[in-house]
Length: 125
Ligand SMILES: [Zn+2]
Image (cartoon, rainbow, N blue to C red; front, top):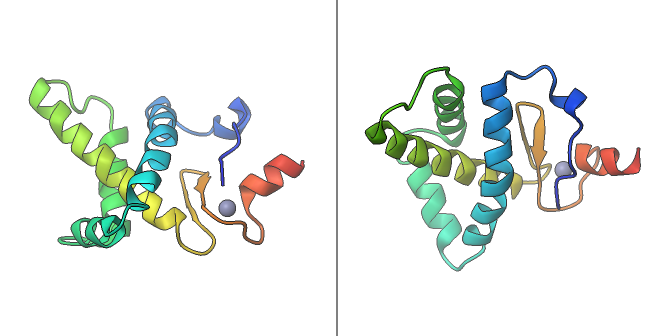
């Protein structure tokens, strides 16, 4: 299910780093969903994401580091940023595939219609 565009006021409570991260994730999560749709990819990605931490821990760590001001200024840090973005998008995509989808920083991703989906409610409003 596609995520409808959000209004500026819907994200006004977020800091600019989180707003930029959500814009990037809006592009990465659908790509991760496409990748996870390939045979064996979901099990591989789930095992990789949970090898050291649970999915929620990966999202929490990546979200915290990616939204912290001043992080990732030198080229070596940028590789780490890319790895964190991929890990976060993969975990959000796995969450989007679950019943009811997943919501992070007020933004919702899901892959099937469900009760009280904020995306559906936004479209109907
Ligand atoms: Zn939904």
